Each structure stands twice: as C-alpha cells, then as structure tokens.
Length: 444
Image: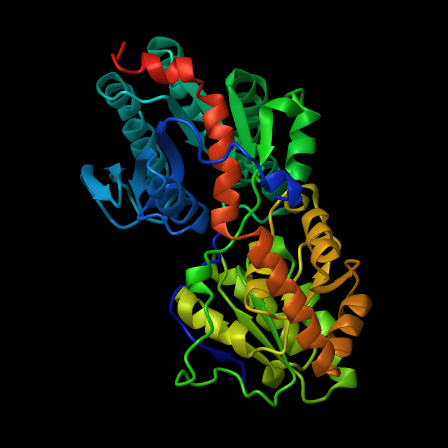
C-alpha cells in the first residue's frame, strides 16, 4: 500500500556565479525606502520574501513596505505591521469556481490601486512590482506622477507558462489561460520591462531569455534562490528518524504538479528497483489539484511499485526537512522546457545545505551549481542515466558523505540569504541614486 500523510508544505518557491554575488559597495549609502506590490500573499511564505526582504534587507535599516492580498479567507482589507515593515493587506475570495477566481483577481487589482495613495503620503525612493501585470501599469503611471524609480521583479515566465498549459491540456480553463498568456506577454515584454528602471530576474538563463526580447542585459540582475541557515541547523538527537537509516531511501521534495513530469522519476525508480530490490522512494509534497497525484499513483500501480513508494503529502517545512535529513539520496528533476530552464532550483540548494548527495538532471543552473560545488551528480533527462546515478550513490555511503560535505560548504559560502542580500542591496542602492534620496523629503 502507498502511504499518505496530510498537512501542508510548499517549497519556497536563477543562477549567478559566486563572483556575481560579491560587491564591495554592499551595505554603503543611505537606507532606501521601497514600496513593493507583489503576487505573494500575506503572510509571505516564500523565503525570498520573508528572509531576503523581511529579515536581511529590513534588518539593515531599509524601509520596505508591502501591498499584498490575504492568503487566508478575508472579506475586508486591513493594515498590519510585519517586522519592520508596514503591510496593506487586501481581501480575497478562496472559492474554486470560475466566478470566485475572477472575483479574487478583481479584488487584487482593486487593492493594488492603493499604491497611489500610499505613494502620495509616503516618501518612497522606488516602487517594485513582483510578478504582477495589470498592477505593473499602475506602477508605470505612479512612476511619472511621483517621479519614483520603477523596479520589476520577475520570478517565473508566467506568460509562457499560461500559453503552454492552455495548449497541453493542464490548464483548468484553457481559453482564459490562452488570453492571459498572450495579453501578459505583450504587457511584460513590450510595456512593463522597457519602462522599468531595473529588472530583477530569477536566473542567468532567464536574463538571457529576456534579453532576446529586446531588454538590455545591463538593466537586468539575476538573483539566485538561497536558504536561511537558521532553518537548516542539524536536528536535535532527540528528534526521531522519519526514515530508517539502514534503508536504501530516495527522496523528492517539492510540488507534484503535472508540469513537473514526475512520472519520469517513478519510471527511473523502477530501474533502481531492478538493481536494489529494497530501495524505497519518498515523495514529499502535493499537487496543484487531485489529478496531479492520481497520475503518479496510476504510474506506480502500472509498474507494481505501490509498496515501494511513500506519498508523504504536504508537510510544514520543519517536518519535511526531517525527511530530507534522513534520506540517503535526494532528487532534483527539472523537466527540460524553456519555462523550467529559467527557474532557480531551490530544492537543490536546500538539499546541499543539509549535506545531502543529490542526483539532478542537466538544467542550466543545476549544472552550474553542481559543477561549481561538486556536491552531486548531474545527468541528462534520461530514465536510465538517472537510475544509474541513484544506484551509484545508494551503493556508496562514502561518496554520499563526500558529495554532501562539498555541497554544504558551497551552499554556506554562496547561497545564504545574507550573501544574496549583499548583492541585492548593492543593486538597489545603485538604482536609487543619492539625488533621488535627497528629493524624497517632500512628496510630490
């Protein structure tokens, strides 16, 4: 029987070399004031928001305020303090029907209009829009009215994803996804990014991709995903093992969405089982809808692997990482499409931060990180190659320890959010010139 545990866990949600993350001007200059309109909800769960902005940058004295929509059911907007920041939280609609989904988006757009009043009353240096399109137009207007810098932060190629999901049958409402994909593509590449004073993107691959759309590379900065060392300390000895240490365990942590094509992992694991009969696969995470996991269950049943695959389900991060801690080999598969090629493999860095040996497929940033760190094995998107790398590591505890040590050393040196914040702070300070900061004393 396949086992399932319920709860919630979402992996927090780029690629840059170690040299690109170092800047001698980091931390210098007058603290900036930044207003952010983001697709993230309140309270923010992604570490690139909660840690990079909420802890690291705010902790250095920068004032970063937010306009966000509520994550939980909420019929009325409200304001709240979040650490050193102020957040304007908008109402939402969590219904699943098309009507409720449209109403949720309308409420979000209406709430984002609040940026005009906030900018009029506050002495901000810049406004940043993250992964929003219609609201980006508001920021463009506000840039001219209030003479502020306009920064756009793109963490994922959403227009391209909408178009692909509309065509491959994975979208719930294909017609709406197609309209959104075409409209947002025009908005993003023809209007918003050309108007932005600077663009932050998720990876060097994304930076190159957007450069082909006509946006100058000099106006874009790639910011890699990282990890918060405080969340990845060794677990106390009293914490019981989630996985038997003697087990030939293989683990994947992350979303089980169809777009990830994780049936590939199940077929690769079937080949592992042919060579190591006692191997067991743990899938920690959940899908976007019930059909995501149903497809994986069906593939496991087809290959007669039901007793060897554990569907753990969504978990709080601390519990999910306990499974990572106990696993022998961790997997970071990224289906090779233009969309996922531009992403930043958060799970790869998190695995390394916990000293785990990793098997990953050839993906622009995964290849870069593994080559620079030596902390894993990178193979083509091929079931046989993936299985062979897993078997190699399962049969060699010493090699697993060596790769785990190399990976952890690399993650600590290059991918903590303290290191990443040095680079982001430097870029923000350069975008907001001393003249801009001097002029903010009187709102326009």
